Image 1 (cartoon, each protein chain N blue to C red):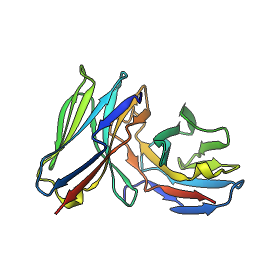
Image 2: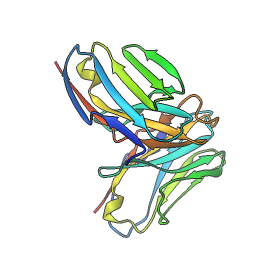
Image 3: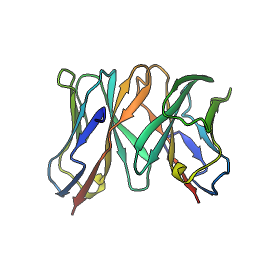
Image 4: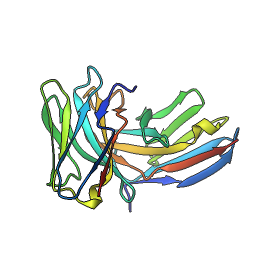
Length: 114
Length: 108
């Protein structure tokens, strides 16, 4: 157990639907990062939150949104799902000081859009 | 051209061999990370480097900032080392940019 908890582990849903992925960071970590790993694009940074505030944005689609709650858990919302959104979605956490002590990754959520 | 390039893309070796995976990057970075992804999909952070060399067990990571190059070495490789190894560079405060990964297979 890495200390970062992601739920659910697997998700199968239909096109056009909306899903929510959840991440609980390692105890003491203030930063949460979301990444998407698809077969054709590899790992890509989506968005980062630090202590409840959005800190950096990457290649995140407008149909996707995220937030970090006061208890520091984060949710990634994916809406109007398309087949191409099928991917592994990883959450990682760090202490927030520039990832000085590295990142801890969750085990990922495998999303399949059918 | 990708900002982070890894070589080789695929590597198959026999148990016991010395393994080297290379990573070159084209941008300024604040740190470089080596990650390991097992067939089950989970990602483990192996090293974070900003200079020099780090060692953990049979794994050694080096970085040359001037040449924008890093290597990951595995000594006395074992089938359990079979995984995808990913190089990632940190730009600015937090954002990671990833290489495409090197798929390593160690045969008994």
